[in-house]
Image (cartoon, rainbow, N blue to C red):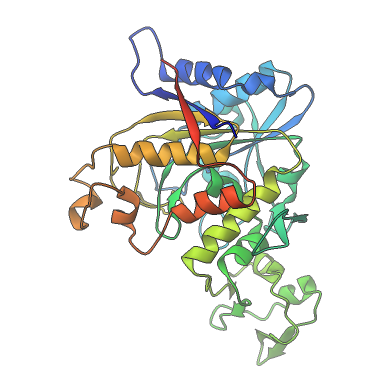
Length: 369
């Protein structure tokens, strides 16, 4: 079986040649123009960054991708789904404010921002997981599944639960609605924080199982009736309903990979990962720690697993920046991800992705100078 082709360009630029120009050449040579974009709605899946965090991708990168898709006749939009946890991206209004604050406006990127799972994170669709071992179906933001073509644009970095956050995480976790994210993070059922509950009963309107009980003006959930769908989480304006986040890191990785498979099956896709400002933690934090390795470059290809593996190898081959979190770790010099987050195993993403047909960890690296 032929190795997946991954294309790479580094961060070096001559005075008359910009990094954005190199990125455009990279995605051209990686074959993005072989996709039929003509009159096709195209989701560009991105992480807009939690306000306060400064390691998210600059919107300039998104404009290169959007302009290329438009030049090929496509209709691109930038998208992400709402977060499960409270913050500034857990409903569409706050989420779009965050995107605009971080520079992702139609004027800077050349395309609109659409939050994939709607106002409260409840606009989603159930999608089968082919070859799924842990899940039979995934709950994905409707706007993402409505797209004809899917393009991921990822900031590659570390992650405290999954080891690293790359294309697979951007696709799988990022495309899950709030209910979908609960299914990945949780093997149990949601609970009500009675200190935050105001007794408005909005949650009961979203519950198809009639699982809500009210006493003394506060809600609780009958877990005998509850099926763990998670829609009540998105229904609450007061963040009073939450998931216990009880999946192990291993199971979380496997479920996330299966979500990515559900998102990509049955339509064209293309994947771009920028390996710069490689922070040790996710861009979901409202702060970012110092980069753990020097900036490396941009990777692109049709296989998200191969793109992730190429990024991992490049980061692990790079010298650690010892003024970063590496000073606090027992650094082996062989695996930066394990050094930073020793309770995680990033190999689970790569291995399970190959096992279920999402992609391959074997790749041929093609340098674009």
